[in-house]
Image 1 (tube, rainbow, N blue to C red):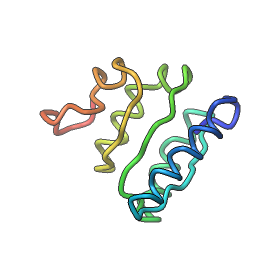
Image 2 (cartoon, one colour):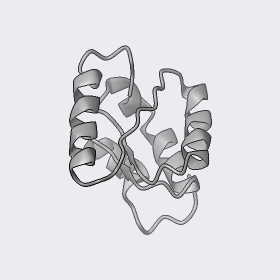
Image 3 (spheres, rainbow, N blue to C red):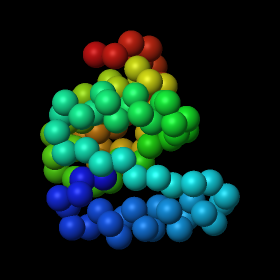
Image 4 (cartoon, one colour):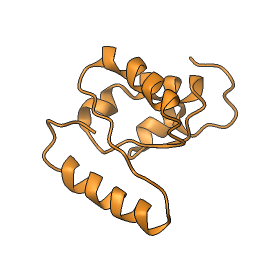
Length: 99
């Protein structure tokens, strides 16, 4: 989540409530700079986070290719909120290598 986006705390609470209802834990990972992305994915892998839901944010939309590549590189199933992020490779099962 982007702590600078006012809607993200409510989105996080909704995700955590839904996760709890199905018996999984929802945790937050904040990122506001492109150089933080790789560290965030490394931390999620270390913590054995099994999937990522990327909150809607124009900053993340602008970084869509980087997020899609990192998700693929780290074999992290990711739910992207915008079509452009999916088109950048977010859900393309045919891709086997980062762009």
